[in-house]
Length: 206
Image (cartoon, rainbow, N blue to C red; front, side):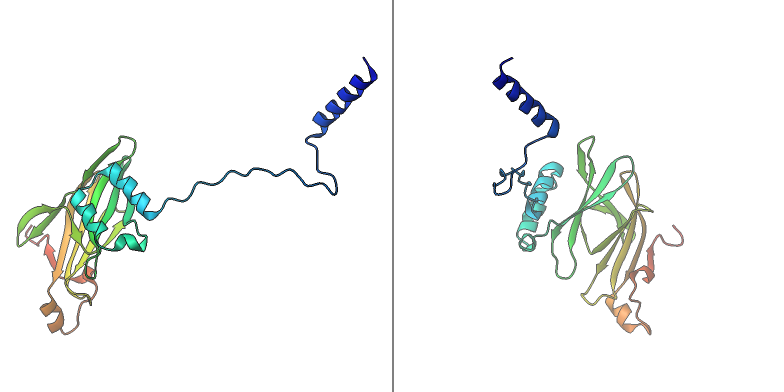
C-alpha cells in the first residue's frame, strides 16, 4: 500500500475510534441544530378541538364565544373520570351573573363516542330532565357524584343544592335541597352551607 494511502487509512480509523473531532483552541465550533419545540396549544385552540370532537350543540358554543370568556384565555373545560373508560366533560357555556352556566358531555376516547348528558331533576313533585345547570359545581371522583349549588343571589344563603350519582354513564338524582331567600333572611340563624338546606327530595315518604 502506498505510504500516503496507509497514513490516510490510519487517520480515518483513529477518528472513528475516538469519536467526532473536537474544535481546537481558537477555532469556532460548528453550530448545532436544536429542534424547535412545537408551540403550546392556546385555550381557544383547545376548546375548538374539543368542540369538533365532542360536538356539543352549536348554540351553546355561540353563547360562550359571545360571553367574553374567550378573551380571558379560558377554555371552560374540565374532565372527570367515570368507569369503563368513560369521562364526564364539564363545558362552561356562559359566565352568568355570579355563577357559571354549564353543560356536561359523556366521552369515551377509545370508542370515539360522545353525547350530551341529561340530568334528572324534580320540581314541586314533578320529574323531568335538564341539559344545563347554573351554579357552582364539584365532582367527587371517589364516590362518582356531581354536586351543583345554584345560588338565588350573589351573597348566597339561598337557592338549591343538587347531587347526582353516576353508575357508568347513567346519572340519577340522589338528593335535592332548597332554601328560599325569605326563609334564609327570616331564620334565627341563617344556614349558609347549602348541604344543610332543607331536604326537598327524596321526601321521607318516597
